[in-house]
Length: 132
Image (cartoon, rainbow, N blue to C red; front, top):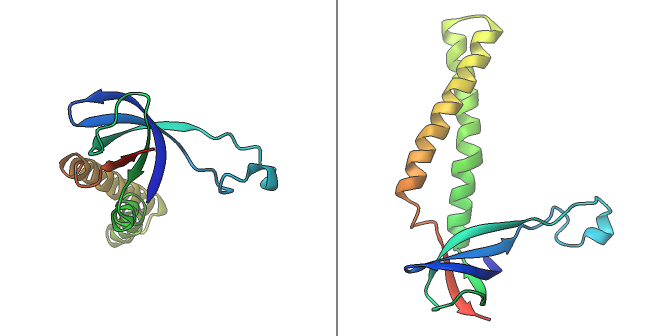
């Protein structure tokens, strides 16, 4: 996955880069007439290219890592929601208990993923590959 952004600030070997979030219509908003507004995000990236503040840069993240990150954020918590619902069914026939246990297990999953994210932060970070 490659992105283009502008370096806003430097901090050691990392740089804060402002990138534009992609729209649902693939940046072709005139064709979809959905009225979406393109928003910008700031991300921290490893500054391998030696960029300075104000530089336009190309960021890179391996596609495999993007897919792993998406699985961690979306698929695993959804599976935990269903697993919690099933576990709640073992202990009670009440629908409220099943739903509550599903959301509790999903919340615990997000807590664990938050801890994992802090430990693997450098592994999934973006890298500034070149200055444009």
